Length: 106
Image 1: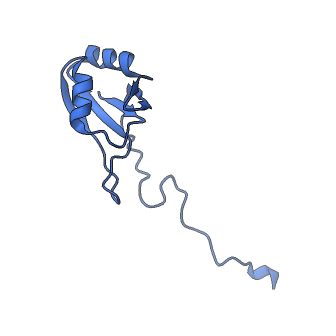
Image 2 (image 1 turned 60 degrees about the horizontal axis):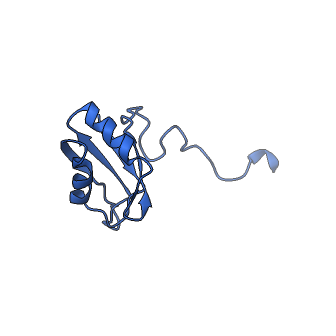
């Protein structure tokens, strides 16, 4: 299981997160997603700790804490849903549609 860390400063780096979370135990990994277009940090991260107890301690201590001028949102990360609805339109929202008029009108 991993921890979701949201509302991060856009200046945050992986080492910053490792230092903060290391106060609560062993940090196994930090994922800090970047925006594809700008290459900037997207404002959230995922941190994996050594044990469930360490994760719980970090969540308890850091959720709503102010860090780098922002109030963090820290909780257990939700597993990715594998709904199979991916693709451009996702969730069956796409396609269809037509020419914008009805032949019955004329």
